[in-house]
Each structure stands twice: as C-alpha cells, then as structure tokens.
Amino acid sequence: MVGPPGAGKSLLASCLPGILPELTPAEALEVSMVSSVAGMLENGRISRARPYRAPHHSASIAALTGGGLRVRPGEVSMAHLGVLFLDELPEFQRQALDSLRQPLETGEVTVARANAHVTYPARVQLIAAMNPCRCGHLGDPALACSRAPKCAADYQSKVSGPLLDRIDLHVEVDPVRAADLALPPPADGSKEVAARVARARQIQTARLDGTPLRTNADLDGDLLEQHATPDEAGRTLLLQAAEAMRLSARGYTRILRVARTIADLAGARDIGRIHVAEALSYRRQAPRA
Image 1: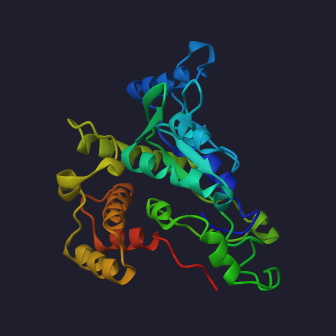
Image 2: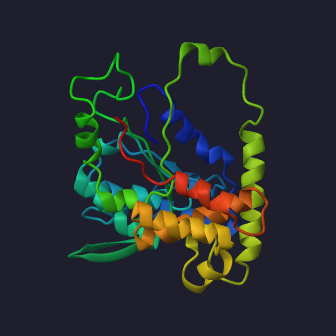
C-alpha cells in the first residue's frame, strides 16, 4: 500500500486477520509448533487465530528470518500462515528486506550457523506500507517538498525490484479528508467480506483436495496450467500486457494466481478477461509525478 501519512494504511493491515478464515486444526498445530520453539506459546494453549506480526523497521536480518546464538525463528516464521506487516517499508535495512526474498518464494527459511542448521516454515501473507516519498505528500502540490517528483524515485528505489516483483498487489491509498469521516459506513463490513473470503477458500480447498497445496498462491507447474488458464480473451490480454509491461516469468505466473483468486471471489468457474484485467491493474505502477 502506497499513500500519504494518516491515510489508514496501518489500520487496513491490522484489520486483515479479521477477514481471514480461522486456522484448521492441522494449521493451528503448525503455528503452535513455531511458537513453542520460540518460547512464546502461552500456557501451552493452541490458538485458531491467524498470527499477525508487525516488526519495527529497525529489525535486523536475524530478527526477520531467524538466528541468534541459540537459533530461534524470526518474524517471517512467527507469522507462518498469517500476516507479516512491514510498515514504512523503505526504512528497513535493504539487506534485511532482501533476506525475505527466498522465504517468500519457497515458504520456508533456512538458518545456517556454525552450531546449527535449521529450517522453519514461513508461508505468510506479506503486507507492506510506505509513503510515496520521504515527505509523504507527493500528490499534493501544496504540501509536497521542492524535490518532487525526484524524491519519490529516490525513496522508492530503497526497495529492490526483485522484492517488489514478489508483491502481487500494489494499491494506492488516497488521503482521508475530514469530510470523509462524516460519510456513512460502507454497506459491507468485515463480517460480509470475511464470508466472501471463506467461500473462496472453500472453493480452493475443494479444488486442491488430494494435494499438499492449500491455496491458489501455491499453484505451480501443471496445476497452475490446469486451474489458472484464462479463456481466450483473457489470455490475449495477458500476453499483450506481459509484453507492454515487460513482466518477468514470476510476474506472469503471479498474475495468473491473482486472477484465479479474483474469479473465486466472484464465484466464477473460469478466468475471464475481466479477472485478468483486474489482476493486471494491481501490478506495480511507476511513481506519480
């Protein structure tokens, strides 16, 4: 999420666990095992709530991925099957952020030390938030600094391209005006959104029954081709966009997974052009002038 200070990015991220389905018994056991290894299992009780971790931007590589003299899981493992929220993304050490690239790709992290070589699970939903530039007001001529738009390019370049390529949805968050706070609440609250998410997850569970996979994010190879191939119109649009946007192979497959999920949320059996178009709209956009 990219937006000015006070736009509600952190609030949106903290609300995300509330719309995710509860952990299954097997998933709860996995999460509890990681918490137990880290010494953070409260009173030995297993929780069905999905974990939510939000480390400070001063976190080191060891804090994010695991390590220490007595090797312990890092934040990416403590958030296994839940949400890892990185606020003020460009303020993290670049090396620390890049250490997350392999866990985000494979769903696990290996910590190698002289006295230990340990692999922890790390399948997370990474949510990141940042201001569009250092001053935070790139889109407001009255508040933007004198270096705009160059300050935006300099600030956003602190995050490496390969890491950004692993983030499926790039959303611009508009500033909240005082008048917006007086508007009536939206028709759909968290309860209604959670119900749609639960239905989509049920569709995915049925689709992947008999495989070790859980969600569309795990689709790859033959299963990706079998379940996430769009119709002819959607395929044509995707090929045109891949050329125009210079998508990497990773970006191409990630768009297919996102389009499959959008179709599931809409209750559609097949992936159509409209689902591909929405998935494409979430890819990384260039900084606004």
